[in-house]
Length: 574
Image (cartoon, rainbow, N blue to C red):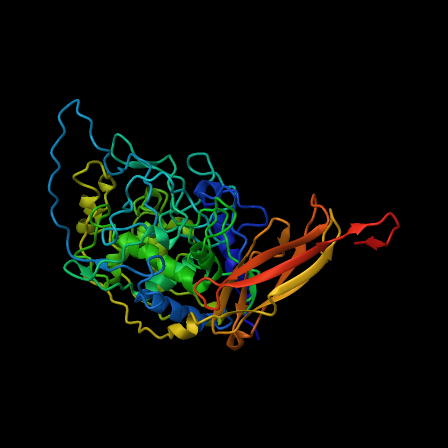
């Protein structure tokens, strides 16, 4: 029996009702033609039309995929899907920048709380990466809010009713609302302008690995091997999408449209960074993020690691930045959704501290379930401690976490509103550095997964490389079908590129499953449209490619004979 996402409908409906109470989130699932926020995230052509897949045994497969991603076990060394080393250690005192004499032009300072807090494209180099790219946190005009599947917050934040007004009078997504953390005379940040969600922050580049040609730095002083506590990733994935790579209408084990939010966030981790659609066709990295769950989870993990590595230059830190300590990830988790005031724990929109912890568990478990009442990082930490129970079983073992206790002076002082500012080239959120809670935790999850089983080794196969058809001038040919299969293992993602405009394809992308996964193939329908072309013989090609697969490329030659029609109906004259 194929597990159905329909079993999650009661949960999703409850989340939708919760969203009615939220004032500034439009991260509800996109209906057909309802991608009104995509342009704001750099996709003027709307979402990519991509087919995706959720495995039937998603509970096991996704748990193992998150665990492998946590230790860079999916795509080590890949500059787009792999993980760089993590920066560690306490903050090193900065060397003050001399004041510029009056009248002398000054360099543009790092973004402050009074500027639009744009985030750098995730995937751009962080302090551990190639310094040729703009560091995240530097002023970049490309980041804008993203959205997520209904009832689930995304890298852009928690969900709200579609079309809900924001605090500034415009519609936006909660969590990464269109906000600018501007500062009032009293030093209290206010929400007024636009920003972009951090975890689903957008990039100016097309999202190809070619933009990061320099290898990751080697582990050395101040750097450690990449590691994220796995339960953090699992909780982010649930908060973002309820562990769905394909649309909610696609059952587990089925193939169908990818899960895409109204602002063009994609898949399990609701990735928006690097996903701009300006040409109508995805790059190979964009295609894999949208179509394949493992690449999506790997990219979301990379986003989170980039947020970690923004400190200490552009973000505050917890203690001495030990990645094995869950509580030390507090600011990176905050940043995944957007290091903006809407996620500040002292934002007046949230209940006063102490507040009931958030839960992803049953609605009668005695904890909080209204996402509008928590900053993003508390949603994730609460979900870790109170995991979801689809089909009556926990998705992961509950993981205790200690959030900053705002009733204690060390945390209250660090998180006071006047510190939420980056207002000079010398200091950037330094005053928000805070100690590690005395009752801190490490994630005991052991990595249990086989990369070869999860990612596999897909091999592109096609049933024919030659297609012949006849057509009337000014008309359409009869359709011809080509079958695309996966002769290897895992999930094969393919894309097709015709050489001529008269070649019409039923799809430019699709999936084929290995025999171990059911052996589902793809049917590619080919037609020739000869409108405006004289009679004659036309030859074109269709190039099939399986990114990150083998058997590439496959070239299908299409030959079309265009014949004129005589004046006698039904008689063809060649």
